[in-house]
Image (cartoon, rainbow, N blue to C red; front, side, top):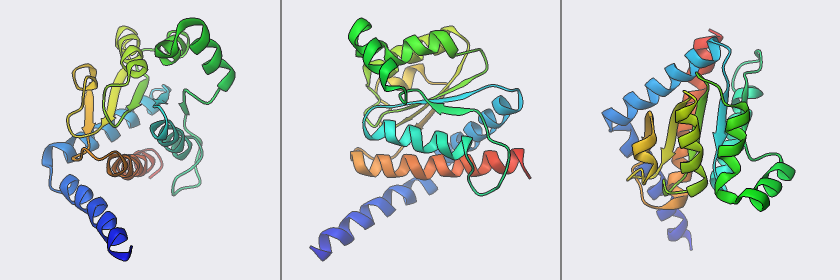
Length: 191
């Protein structure tokens, strides 16, 4: 049992070490932090979407922006799109689950807003539909995926594809990367 725990910790560390050695991914992380900084400076929104554990990660990261991270500062406009359960169940029932994020973006998404899409596979149909709407509305699309990027790869302005195919390791890397971006943005806006 102890060795299994150690092996899981080493696997998680290996993914983070791979990120630290990937110059292109590091540059994309920096670019995403800059894009989010610029969007917030221009009074735009940061919107997050995901399913299951990725929805929890979306909500977690939105809270880091809208609440606080390290600094006691002005809240930033960030929200996870799945948090209204009445909306989610009504639209899922009336239009199909693949439309839950696309439909809300038609109502609240604006040019210059950033949509952060989180999916370990990169193939979530409701997120792919949301990306189509976001693109049509002039939003900036950041995708956080696993190694291949899946179908989301092609519709992304910025792809943060974690160097793993193992769902838990990808999710751990998403949170680490999201925390890094949040810290950079917070320092950019509230130095």
